[in-house]
Image (cartoon, helix red, strand yellow):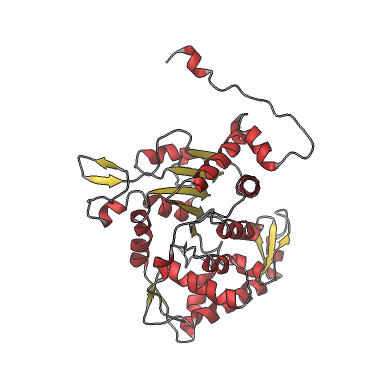
Length: 358
């Protein structure tokens, strides 16, 4: 490699001007350095994802983002079909219901006596306060829905949350599940019981009503997504289970198809094992975790290349080490300026076709 090959793109300093659009600012940041550059690159990758035909865009949504007011941004992404599948913690798609019900959260402080909060029935999410009484009202509402679920049917989390979305939609509660159901976007929550949903299942059980969530059926349903599209693009907000499950679309199609591959998809083959893999063509990761501790949340997209999960082609992935409450609003406002038409996403209705009627 010659010396000149290192000097292909000259860094361009940012000039401050009045009334500069956010999309323009991020484009200019993409020509600088460090995480500002990565934030700008993330917008470019997502925009290319949106414009790519025959592509499913899946988002992994971890953490406690809804209590921080980010749930309305997810609704906007769903309504514009800038995501086609959401893989979320149970917290993110239950705690938003509190706000959607009109109860809300309050700006607080991390410099507070937490024992006093406990005795005052106040829950703290770093610098956000929520009322335990409001949390219970949300759980009571969700329990009302759980009581309508069929006891002799085995639901996937996507089916369960789709039904919940329809239930909330009829009550004009614009939670993430309601907006997703109205737009035909499935929500998978593989660790759903690790949230208010687990408690609502117990509350329903105490009333003599048992609901069944089938994890194997759910994984089969989820991996099928990789057999019904030409390409997959992914956006990871944080890491954890939502990120890991979404990664598996790329490689778990091989055991699903008994190592016969997917017709019409371009992938790779581990010849010694005869295993097919279909790397995600586009990938964005917003995280605050470092890779050197070995955890998935900090695992780089480059590491995922070794698994066959991520495309090795340059310009198709971006990792930004940044608080998602900073990155996500900026990225989405830039997308709103750059992409002015609603995207026509793939039909995901097949996921709900076998559900019993409520």
